[in-house]
Image (cartoon, rainbow, N blue to C red; front, side):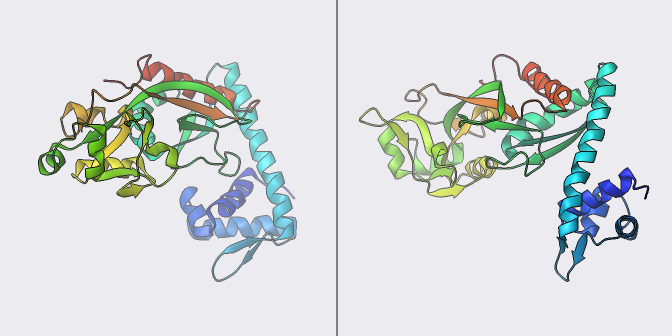
Length: 300
């Protein structure tokens, strides 16, 4: 039968991307080559793995069974590569990292060049998800999560902490006035999260000494979208220092109600499954982040 790893990788790519065209792009092949490779695999197995409809590709029962074994095979190959690389003390292979887009853009991306220089044999895949994801379902090796962690079977390693504060653009404050008291926020446009709602708890205390939980005038699931809205003068926002330091230094955003702000630092953790075959890759990436960010996190 002599099935090749290229044929298995091609099949998995077609399933994961949902089309032969997308798989070809991912594998840097022509569409015709990817289609021929899939056809050759089905011919060798003497079965149909995928039903081709006008709208999408669907796995057959045989395809479901073969997909599970195919993933096991590729995982075993990656594990073998990792073991060989470990003998040379150099992590190698593919590492899939997920983080919310603000953390990915403002923290991870600027550190990638330094990581790649130290670990050139690790091939990175960077994904951005605004909410919590299922690592197995999304085929993710390590996720960087901001805020309190829920009970989980995942292993967590602290990366850093980041203070949060209320901010607005100077233009917005000129047009609408600067709030002097927490109660003044009721007169302003407030920029907050559509989900999770817990992010709408700001580091301020109301008249009864309770944490302020705002109802957004403009909402978004993306912290980066909220940052851009604030920069464009649409209202007051509460964001982590890791994504606003440059804006504050350039005075594009200024802190609102600084004296009433309660010191609160959001924890940032790397989460991943225990006993993973790619632990050396995860350890190299997480340790590099901890080292590069430093003990002081993002405050400033």
